[in-house]
Amino acid sequence: MIASRPSMLLLVSVAGCIVLQPSRAHAQWWSHTPADFEECADAAEKAATKEQKTAALTACNAKFAGRRKPGGGYTYYDFMQNRSFDIAGPNPTPEEQKHIDQQYTEFLDQQRRDSIAAAFAAKQQQLQQANLKSETEKVPLPVQAPNKPQAAAANLKTRAKAAGCAEHSFSCEWPRLSESINDLKKALFGSSASKAKQRG
Image (cartoon, rainbow, N blue to C red):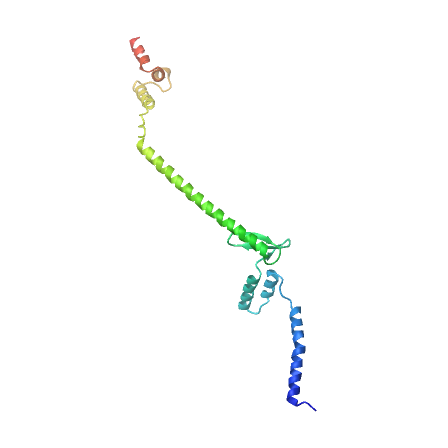
């Protein structure tokens, strides 16, 4: 008995699907998928339009976390810690990701400790400044005495000019020298030296 034409077509189409299915899977196996971000980015650069290129690069970023190192291997940049980690492949392994997460926890702990220490240091500085201010308000500042030696020297020069002395002559310089010696005696021995001088 000869099969009808429509059933024969159905049989051929089913057989064709069965035959074509393995070849399609075989073709996917042979198609080249990028191994890392750099290969993926190179393929994205060949996109026809700017929008396609941007979309392809975004997909590369999402697919591959690591970046190729110049000497070989890969590195993963964690922007939360602002630091990079060496990794074995284009993406961190579960063990590498666990290590990165532990480092992030330590990073947060260190930041917390640093901020507490900075706040404590600022508080200490405020207290010290407040104490210093209150102490300076309690203690009166000493009043500066007028500068007597300069005034005495000015008086001597005035006297010497009035007497008609030539500058730097011994007779005019002697009174100034004598006055300086008397000031020195007063400073060293007090007023008793001047009293003894008055008696003699």
